[in-house]
Image 1 (cartoon, rainbow, N blue to C red):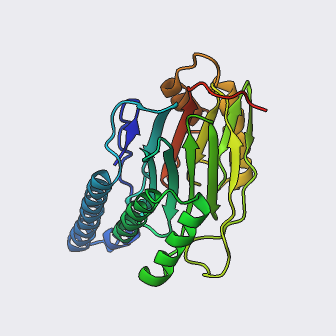
Image 2 (cartoon, rainbow, N blue to C red):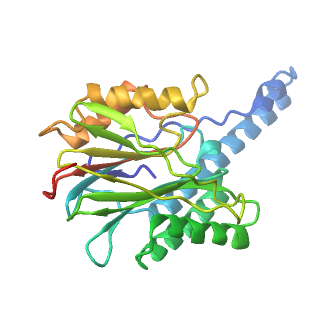
Length: 297
């Protein structure tokens, strides 16, 4: 699925699953060899295309319905979600943004290890489980601890990363935790920084380590960027360099500035960092704080 909340749907990247054996089969020098190699290449390409269609359709049925920008209490939410260019690289990235009983807003992004339909199926279990657990009102660290138990006991040989938080529109306090996942980026008054991450290991790694909790009080006009590693990591650079590039692009494109167009800003950011990742899913959830509340200390 190309889920775009608040913007137009980008065109699907072309399927590129070439059969390296097709060329050697075609080089046998006989018409039969050429025909056999060509058929095998065409069959593999068609299977890859069909798997991609099924995977995207399944993910579209699982993730929030794409459409207009979501207006939640005290915040506006927009998402850019683009699958990997290669069918074999489609993964288990996900996001969520939902109001909770009592007025707080639950926000999360995550990434299940692996690719293809197994990763999508596991992603669905984790996403729905975490959203359900959030209805208890427990702190984000406890939510991730429960989710970790689920991964260890029900999803053999699976690991996943996630960052989740609770935003209170009245106090503008964002309380969050992470499990081996890149920390959110805060864009404020013409600058950007990555939040300091509380302790937290990858889901499915160990049952013994607790998940820490951090909080930050947001100002009206602040922008919070939550993302998966497909946004910041490339073969040619590490995650740290990618995060720096995203922060520079967020400032340069005016994200977080008063009156800024959130949709246009996200599109400009993706373009500034080189476009979507062809080898991994890209998920970017932007939270623009709009509500009034107590001043930032």
